[in-house]
Length: 93
Image (cartoon, rainbow, N blue to C red; front, side, top):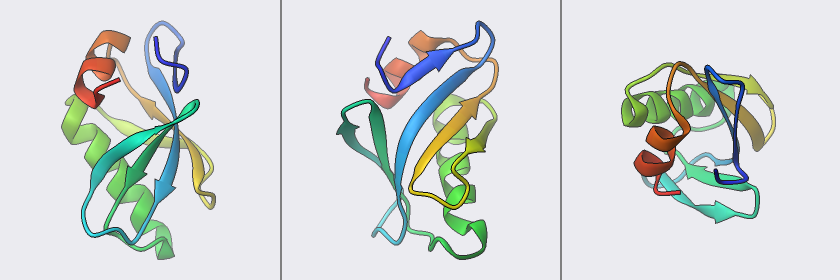
């Protein structure tokens, strides 16, 4: 399992670095123990957080929610009821 990903046996917790205001929504690259995610939405009003959750939910066909770091570039995102293998292959880890 990649260092950016942990599991509690039911859900996956991803450590990410959010980059709002990008030209498009994309899983950009690995940064040590984090995954860089670029989103076009601005950070104001939680728009970037919603865009990150939508991107991860769409890619994994599961529910994604911000667990911590709501106002920070460094965040933890919970992806519900999905296996580590599914997340790793979907995100290219």
